[in-house]
Structures are given as C-alpha cells and as structure tokens.
Length: 225
Image (cartoon, rainbow, N blue to C red; front, top):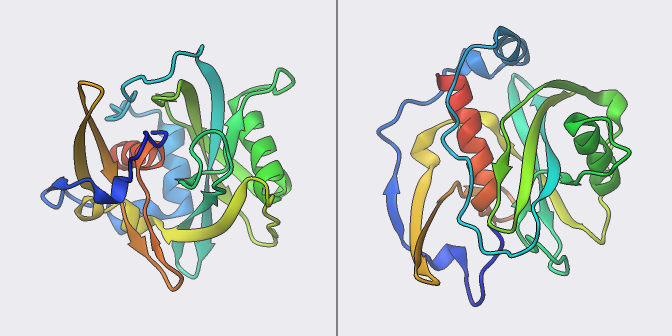
C-alpha cells in the first residue's frame, strides 16, 4: 500500500494479532523442502489478492524477488528499505523489484533484472524456486512475487537512488502468525485493512507492512496449506 496523505501506518491501532494460528513447521523452512513444495503443485489458496484501489492510472505489471539466504541452519528473507525520494512506496520496506520491461522474457526475468539494478545481486547466485499469484497494490501495481534461494558467494551493492538499506529477517519469524498484526483505518469513505510484521534487529525496528506483508502472508498460506 502506498502511503496515504498524512498517514503513518505505525500510528494505526492494532485490531488483532493472529497468534491463534499455527506457525509453519521448521522442517518446511529449508531449501530442499521449499523446492519440493513448489515442485508438488499442491493446490493452495492465497489470502491476499488486492488492496483497495486509490490510483487512477492504468495497471502496471511488476515483479519482486523474494530472496532467501541461508545463515547457519536457517533461511533469512532479504529485504530493502526504499529511499524517501521515490515516487511510489517511498520509505517503505520492500522486496527488490519493479516494473516489467518489454525486453523481459517473463516475471522471473523482471525480478532478477530489478534485483541486479537495485541491490547488485548477480543472477548467477540465484536459484528461482517458483512464483506466487499476482498481488495488486492500491497504486495499481500488479506484482508477481518470485521466490528464490540465494547461494553463497554473492555480494550486494545498493543503488543509492532507490535503496536506503538492506537487511535480513528470519523466515521462521515471518512464518509465525503470532507476529502478524492486523490494522484497520477509515480513509476516503472506505475501511482499509492490512497486516504488519514488525521486526527489531540490532539497527532498528523494521516495520514490514502493506504489499510486502501481504506477500509474506501468502507465503505463509502456501507453506501451511
């Protein structure tokens, strides 16, 4: 969700926490298990499809890379903090990604190209596992999330015009709905709801919300179903 006028998502009350839901089993959060889950083509139902529309422009196809990095015996999700000067989703936590180009062969090609441009992640270290259904933002981006394991040896170089910071969050933390908080607000005569998944590391609280949290929630449903 793009920030609305005079809107700080951190100040919107929490209306619920999903601690009553089961967390994903640890054995399902390993690279081999994830690859098997994608290969199985087992049916599942995404929970998050689209945000209420607030943009009048034509929908734009985009892709994001959901990069999973092994640290020790657990996977971490690599995320970025977008710079404050960007025209959309500025200052928000996001996956590396962006709009599709006509030259891109498919959604995965878009995600890999954008990850190279935004954070300097070389595609030779990236093993694409699969993708999730399109998630449409209120700003009319039709996002295809592409899930991938990033193998050791990579280096990162953030584009300072787009990325203010790069950090990691344990996949196990994000796949535990006890960390999924529900928010709601009335805006422009409509009730808008979203999830947040705040995570505190050594640097700061990372307020994950909006489209990024919605895609992560679908990841949870994918592994749970």
